[in-house]
Image 1 (cartoon, rainbow, N blue to C red):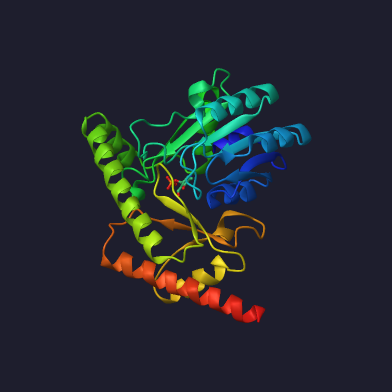
Image 2 (cartoon, rainbow, N blue to C red):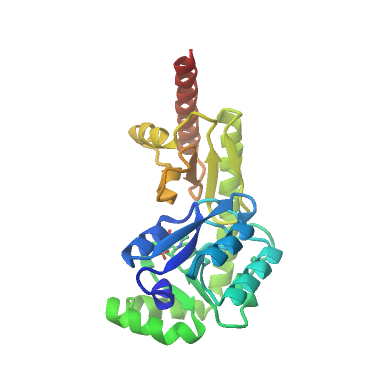
Length: 295
Ligand SMILES: Cc1ncc(COP(=O)(O)O)c(C=O)c1O
């Protein structure tokens, strides 16, 4: 709805590459044109490339994940958030800031969203309780400023309203102090699970598989060595009851076939350890097959 509030069909929208498949689906559904901007697993979106795109195309809106990007896990530094907001202001372009993982930080402080720098009402700051309270509540929110009315209208025309009892239940819960302590516990648990996953992956995966750690959220982005395919790995792993998200899910083109995303929010147990060993042996098989093709 935020994207709809900022655009008309056929408008250009800047997105990260790779990006959350929900953003790609929304762009397709609303008949928008995506301009994909290279995004680095460590530093986030390439702001020079975004600047160039804003110069070259009449971009109406951006949809970016400034904190704990899905699938990369990266967070834009504060300096880069300042640069981003200055750019949005210069070109008068709105931003759908998708911050659904922002509360799930590993350090001491929540990374502030770019919205904190927004003096011109260009940023629609979106989040959800799906990631930090209950997935099936399917209740989200947006701090939309002067766009709030048009979003309310879009909601009315679409689903009328999100479930009122669920909203009331969440409002009541938020009025207690338990939410903060719940979040503190959740952050600690997720960090422990992620560390256990990284330790296991480092121990078992071939040395030339790169793991990009993140400081929040619960995804890890991995890069296979040249010549290997995460799509093939996806199918092979699925046969063994293991689910990975192949890189191609996060783009409309053919990129990222050497990459995949792992969800490491699960309690790390013997089954997870075994799954990592299985993944490692499937990757080894692809490496062997690649060598035999060369011969
Ligand atoms: C980056 C990102 N944005 C938005 C959503 C959608 O959130 P919800 O589950 O509340 O619909 C997700 C869910 O996977 C997500 O990963």
